[in-house]
Length: 475
Image (cartoon, rainbow, N blue to C red):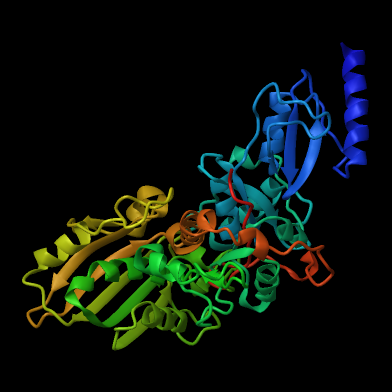
C-alpha cells in the first residue's frame, strides 16, 4: 500500500507540474482526492490527502474548488471542497484586520471564507498568531493591564501566515483598513477589477465612491452601481466608526424629520488601533480632546453625517478619546421638524426599527433600546448581537421639542470590519450574483512591482490599513 501511494504521489506531482500547478504537494494517509485554491489560484495538492491535512490546509487559507482532483482527474472520495468566496485583508495584522481574520476563520459564514491576510513587510511570512500575541501584549504593556486586556488569538488562526500585499490581487474581494497615505493600494486593486470594501478615510469624500451604512442607504447606494459592471467599480466606503452607529439611530428617527444634530463622542482606545498614544498619560486616567489633532475625527464625522443625511441643516461634533478599551459612547442632541407627542413615541421609533436587509451578518434588531438608568454603557453593551447592534438609551424630550439620547457602538465590529463585511454581503447578494457582466469586467493580469508589500504597513482603525477584491459567481 505504501508503494502504491508513492506511485500515486509521483504521478500526481508530475501531472501537477505539467499543468502549471503548485508542486509542493501535501500528502497524508488514506487516498482522499483534494484540490484546493491557494490565494485564488487553482492548485492540485494531492491524491492522498487526509481529512486532517485538509483541515490544516483550510486553516492556512487554502480553498478548494470543484469535485475532481486536478492531478489525476478522478472524483473525490470524500467531499472536502470549500466553494465559499475568499476575502483578502490588507492591514490584516492591524487591530481591525486581526479581528476580521478571526471572524472569517470561524468557517461558519455561508458564502465568505478567509483569504490572504496581508500585512507589512516586517510581518510577512510570520505566523499570524505570533504577530497577534506580540501586538496585544504591546498594547497591554503600554496602557497597563487594568486598561487593556489582551485578546487571545483564536486557535482557528493556527497555521495562518502573513501574506505579501501582492497576494491580494489574486482574490476578488478585499476588505481594506489601510492608512489614508497608503490609499493608492486600494486604487490599484480597484483598477484590477477587485471590489474594495474599505473603512479607510482614503478618498472617502469623493462622490464617485459610495459611502454606505447598510441600514441607512445600502440598497439605494448599491442599486446605483447596478449598471456599472462593464466599467470600473468605485471604492465601497464605510464611514467613521461613530457615524456607523449614530446614522442607524438617526435613520430610526426619520419619521420626525431630523434637521440639526450635535453630538459629543467618548471614543475607546481600540479606535486608535495599534498606534499608541505617547506618553500614555494622554489617555490613561484622562480625557483627550481630538479636535485639532492629527486624527481629524470630528471633521470626518461631521462631513459623513451631512452626506448620509442631505436634509440635515446643521451638524456639530465634539470628539474625545477616553480610557476605555472597546465601545464608543455618544451623546446626541437633535432638533426635529415634527415634534413627537411624547418621549414614548421616540422610544417606540427606536424599538420598532426593523432590519431592512436579508444578509447573514445583519442583526434582526439593529437597535436595542434600554430604559435602565446607567445604560447604555460600553462595558455592558458594546457586544450586543456580536457587536453589530447599536445600543440606545437615556432618551429625553424637552418641552420645546429638542431630543437627546445616548448610544454605544462597537467600534471594531459595527464601526469597522463588521460594517465593511455587511457591505460586501449586500453587494454579493444584491448585485454580484445577478450580474452577467462581472467576468467581462474582471481584469486578469500579473502583479507588477508597483503593487508590492514593500510600501504597505500596518495601520489603525481611525487612520487605517487594508486591501480589497471579488470572486467568480457561485455555481
